[in-house]
View (cartoon, rainbow, N blue to C red):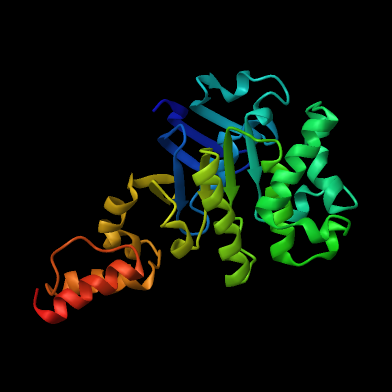
Length: 284
């Protein structure tokens, strides 16, 4: 697969700050992959997301070193609005993205700005409404629906423009478990049906792990660990040392390994953990 994002020796320092928000980042994303980025608060995850979509340095003042290439082109070399046709971003606060008075108007706003035909807008509206389950609330004001519904509207509005790369910056941080799962169910459908490149900055590891092809851990402005998801979580000790709490099954088998009661690969799912635990208890 080709690399759609390549970041080399990249550092960023916001104006009037002493420390770099990002320091010496080398990171790449392959086309069609699903990448999870995790780390403690203040580690630089959002700054990295904003750097990939051109908000940095486009909307922020600071000092940049290194390169951030998207589809082989430095983000600063894109014309205004050009990169946004290729890449969609969903923020943790959905209301920050709303511009219209009804959910339907919110969903078609971006498509109208892209100059799509009325027929194409109708087809995409039908597709994204079905995907996200927003049909019953198309006439409602987006500010008056629930938090989970707002996040689905923000996600649907971006998906309707069918970006080649989708970045979600902590999209479930303010949601309850049911709404959080629903967002990840939508992402699962997107992965299976559309083959988009998806990058998710997220704390909800139980929902993220089953979807992610690769994971990256950010700590103190650096990426200190990056690997395929299964291999990544064999380093659970490093995650714990940096304040990352793994899902119960992962944490349990890590504890067994620490006590030399298990020497295999740490399972990432409850089903796999149950199977391995059954084998251990039966002496297999």
